[in-house]
Length: 199
Image 1 (cartoon, rainbow, N blue to C red):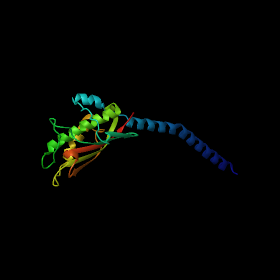
Image 2: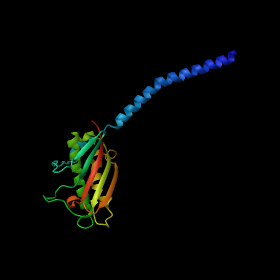
Image 3: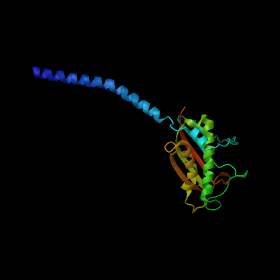
Image 4: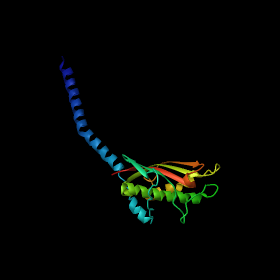
């Protein structure tokens, strides 16, 4: 066997050893940095509780359920909040149909009220709104006439509140806004939501 071939094999082996050593030194650091980045991604960067005070918003007291409904269920990092309707207005139930009894602005006000009630449920479940990482999904249902077309505008009352409290990034999630022929008790809007949470 020629010295030239032996030298070439020796150099190739040295190269492989060098690459392996470098990989052994660099890859653990890369994985740990990714883990740190992923952990940071799950940390809320917005102080929702402070923002709530800044906006001078008070969350309504939670009402005890009188049936088999539970206000929310947590599964891992997700908090599923049941569908909620608006609270009473001047002591009377909030009822009406968009496109018939109510205008868009009234629907938006109802959706915003639902947002406050949703935040109340989230705080009760987690202990603090600062444990919310982000809003993941919103399903908005609007009690409306067949020819009503502004369901998204109505649900904006809820969505805008989420952005005000959690910020532009964490307060926006996937969303659906659909029309319904009727909702329980004749309420104008019902909204359910899913949040990513920590702690």
